[in-house]
Length: 493
Ligand code: NAD
Image (cartoon, rainbow, N blue to C red; front, top):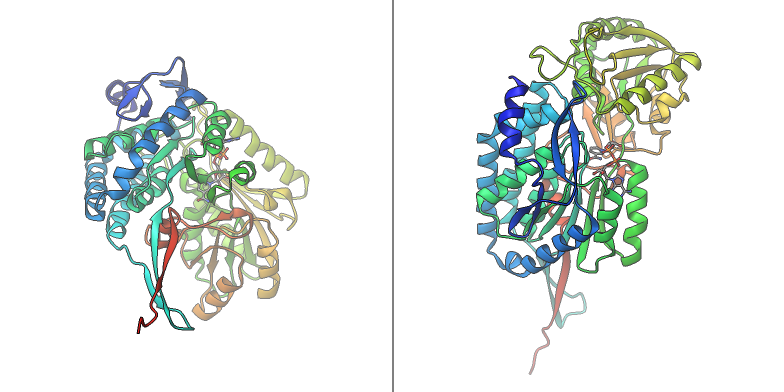
C-alpha cells in the first residue's frame, strides 16, 4: 500500500485545513498545524487548530442537540451505530492508511486497529437497546423504587495518539448509545483518523451537533474551557497518568463525572512450568505490537530463574529477527515511535538501565537509510528490580528482564508499582496461572495470552492507571447516571 496514494487521495478528501466539526458543518479555524509521518518525519497534512472560542461553540452545539438525541428511541440510536460500524468496515483501507500515515504503525497493526475500533460501534449498537433498570420493594414496605439509567449529558472526550481510531470509538460509541452528545479532542499528533471517523458518523446520519470534533495544539485551553463550562457533565480521558491527574483536579471544581484510562506498567510473568514457545509468542505481541506504545504493553518481564536463560535466548532470537521499518514497508513488523523526542527518551531509558547494571542482550537491526523516529527493539538482561526502566512506563520497544525465584516474590515485585492496568501470566498449570492472576493488582490479566483488549470485556485499570471501564456493559454505564423514583405504595384503605 503506497502512502503517497494516501497523501494525494485521502488527505485531499479530508480537506486539510477544514478540520473542525462543530454543529452542522466542518469549519476552518484561523490557523493550522502540521501533522507528521513518524516513519519519515515529513509533514503530511495541515489541520485546523481549534481555540477556546471554538471549544465553547462546540459545547453550544452539543448542548442544543442533547434533548432530541436523548429522546431518540434506543433502536434508532442503535441503527446509527450499526451503520457506522458497516461504514468503518467498508472504509478499512482508507482508515488503515490514515493510521499508518500519522501514527506510523505497520499495515497489519493498522488494519487490526480498524477492526477493533469498528467493533465498539457494533458492540454498543447492541448494548444501546438493552435499557435495563431495576424495580424494588423497600424493606419496610409501603414504597416501591424504580431505578433508571439516564444519559449524563454533554461528554468531553479526550484521546491519545497511540490508537487514533480505537481510543475514539471506545468513547464515542458508548456515549452515543447512552444518549449523550459529545465534544471530542483527538491528539494533535493523530487528528486525521478521528476526522475520518467523524465523517463516517455524519454519513451514517448522526444529527447535527451530536458529535463535534476539535483538533487543536492547545489541549489545555480547549479541555479546560470544557471543564469550566457548566453544560459539560462528563470527561472521559485516555492518556498519561500525569495529565489525568491535572484533569481530575480541574474536574473537581465542578464535580464533573470522570472516567480515566491512564498509563500502565504491565508485568509479564513466566513461571518455571510455562510453555516457553507460547510465552515467547505472547511476549512478542505484548511488547512489540504498536512498537511498545500501548498502555497494555508488557513493560517488565519477570522470568523464573530456572528458565530465564532459555526464555531469553528464544525471545532474543525472535526479537533480532523483527523487521523494523516505516508503514510503507509491507514487511515491517515494528514501526517508528511517535516523535523524535519519544525516540530520544526511550534511548535514554536504555542508556540509564545499562548504567544501572543492565546489559543489552539482543537488538533488532534498524536499516541505516530510515529517516523517521526509530528505536531498535531491544532485550535487556541483568536488570535490577528497582531500575527506573522497570518502574516507569517505557512506551517503546524495550523489554527489560528481571529474574525471580518464587511465586510470592514475583507477586510482590509485580505489585510494587503505582500502576495497575494490564498484566500477563504464562504458567503451565492453569490453577497456578489463575492464582497468580488473582493476586496481581491489575484491571486486566492475560492468562497464557499476550493481548487483553476485547470490546465485550471491561477495559480499565486500578491504582493510578485510572477510574472506570470502557467496553462491555460497564462502558455504557460510564455515560449514565442512576435516578430512582420512590413511589408511594401504601394501601390507601
Ligand atoms: P498524553 O497524556 O500526553 O495525551 C493524551 C491526550 O491528552 C492528548 O489528546 C493530549 O493532547 C491531551 N492533553 C495533553 N495535555 C493536556 C492538558 N494539560 N489538558 C488537557 N489535555 C491534555 O498521553 P499520550 O502521550 O497521548 O498517550 C500515551 C499515554 O496514554 C500513555 O501513558 C498510555 O499508557 C496512555 N494510554 C492509556 C490507555 C488506557 O486505556 N488506559 C490507552 C492508550 C494510552
